[in-house]
Every structure is written in structure tokens, then in C-alpha cells.
Amino acid sequence: MGRPTTGQQSPSYCFSRPEAFYIRRKGIGIDRHPLLSLLVCCILTLAAAGAQAQRAVVIKGRVTDTSGRPVATALIGIAAFNASTTSDTHGAYRLVIRSRVRSGQHAVLTASREGYDFVSRAITLAPGAELTESFRLQPLE
Image 1 (tube, rainbow, N blue to C red):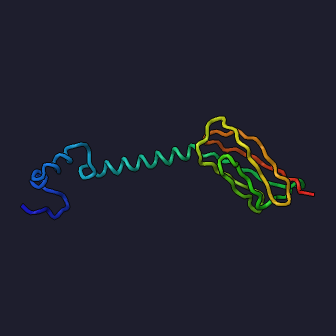
Image 2 (tube, rainbow, N blue to C red):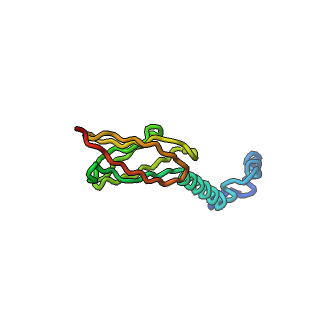
Image 3 (tube, rainbow, N blue to C red):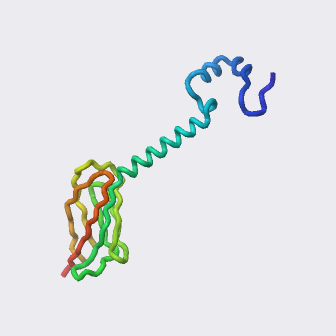
């Protein structure tokens, strides 16, 4: 009996190799249930993505000077998480922290730009939280 052309092994070919028969009889293999394996992979991928999305903390706000004008390219960050971003031309920023965050964890959020005093603020984080923190920077004399 020759090898089948469909890519699957015939039963006689499997039985002619005892180790192949033993491996096929042991558990659920990809060759026996390809749709089940694909479904399990999809579920695990979605679960990992969902868990990552649940842990992310989003901090957004606006950076202005003392007269209320937007401050572009200000650096906003949390050193403890090694996370930072910059404000756009309208002074708006959005900082996403994807690291593990414990509920009630405290951190220091800092905003700075050349020519201005930096401002630091203590904040409390929680997994999946969305915070709004705006800053008013004082120009240096």
C-alpha cells in the first residue's frame, strides 16, 4: 500500500510505525482536530488582548501657560513606569500606561517644557482607569 496523496496517513501506515500510533492516540492533536486547535488559539489570543486592555491606564488632559494659551511639545510622564508623551499644538496629551498597575497605586505625574517651571502632581491609579489631569505651567523669569 503506497502513501495517500491527500496528505493524511492511512491507518495501515500508522500501524506500521508503533510510535506514530502511540503519539496519535495520546491526547488531542492538531492533525486530529484542526478546527478545535484554531478555536483554542483564537480564544487565548483574545483573552490575552482583553487582559492587556483591562490593565491599561489612560491619562489625558491639557497643558496651558498661566494666561491659558496651549503649551505645545510639553513632556508629560510618570518616571516610575518609564512612560511619557508630549502635548500637541493645542496642548492636549494622552498617556497610556500598559504596565501592571495595582488598584490604589500612587504615582507622580510630571509636566515640563523648556522655558517653563515643571509641575508635579500625585495621582492614584487603578487598572483600566481613565484619568483627566490638566497642567498650568509658569514661564521662567
